[in-house]
Image 1 (cartoon, rainbow over the protein chains, first blue to last red):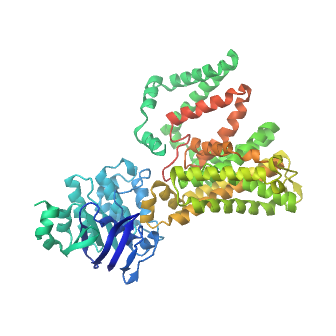
Image 2: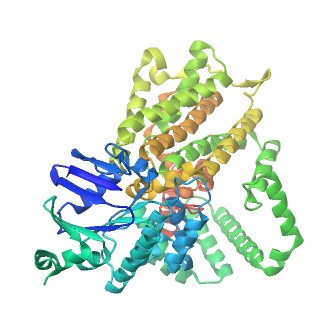
Image 3: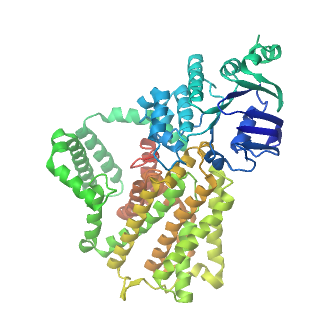
Length: 232
Length: 398
């Protein structure tokens, strides 16, 4: 579904991604793990079109994504939940969700119902301002908002960042539910253990290149990964 | 500033809470205190009689206001047939009217010229022109969140476009009007292209610079603009052979444009385009992640906002029959921005209220001469402390 070939990307003067090859198949959950500054987020940004790759090529459903602007990438079915949530604090929960359906011209009430089923708390707070929600609820809102666009590929950047463990595991459970409904997911996480447990496959990124890859369960057992990222 | 204002809105300013506790909860008591305060403020400038009069007017007005509000909340009123009738009437006049306020206002503005002196009407015409400007700036600053400190420049482009077309080429008001508006829009786009890369303070500085540059050009390009002497002898508009130059017909002309601008700005706010603008204002990266083309929508905001500035400029030139660079200084840009913020950023009704207030108040306070600006300044500061969201409340999606 999504293919990256030898993608290089830089963040200002910093070469953050130096030749990454990766593959996401339809229906999968794939995670990118790695330390701070390894290039995970930049890889995601390159897919969503916010960062332009310096070299290499990106394909989505057989079409080239190089040079496609961010808003057009969304139209093609890739939706990103940016790091740090970035909900609209001065708009209500309901309005936030409606913004997610910006590109849709037909009735999107079914999507809204689906989001409310996934996150019942959002339904209870639909008239509350986004900025008054707790961190976990804001993360739910950010995910729900992205789902309003009906993406076939969902990019999640650090969905568990800054959340209490119980809230984080709730988010991870929901990610699995969303995946079981047919949405392919590419996930970036610092919380390597939870991410690998959840994912079908994983990539370990170090210094902008892929250091390891494999099935989620295999990577969990891998000695190197254990030592470097799982603290065992 | 903006984040701070929102913060205060969410949590309720601490100082405001203290003052509220001090004033007590009884509406009657509160009305008396505010009235007395207003009277005391006036005392140094006028005599005791005037102060007493102000005290009584303010207090009585507030008591009436609180009373009306309490009455509006009673079940009997909510169920009354009269209220239903009013609402139905309002909706039949305008589908956009959520209450009966707008049709009543419109009726008042329609009959006002029959009842008041020329001087008041003249003030109202200026208030109308500033309402157009404030509505235009609301699109750029209020909806899209692009701070603009040089909005008077586009007002000037509209005014000079009509002045030049009329005096040099002899083109009438109606053919000139779309040209003047397009010229302002074009100037807006021209500024938007470099400004798109900037945001916040940096954007504000660029727009400020643009305003100053245009002012300098108008002042110094003698062969075209006649420099500081300005351009005189601009023809007033006429319609089907009748001149609209007299104050009363002109008032109605401006009123028509204010209504058109009002409807279009309110409509566009609730449209897809308006949603896109608000998303960009709230968070540009999030907006892009939802498929909103920020570049396109920012350009649109500049073009649409400056369009109304161009219309306002042409109307101003046709009213004054004279334009000079003096009318389009930075002070003017600041004044328009104050109107937009005063009424409630992002609220078109607020922008109109702000425009009326800031045009009419200095006239009302004219007796106080130099002190009037001082009072106005204090009033604005107090408003921002106790009601940071503006008179009618702003922001938000609705």
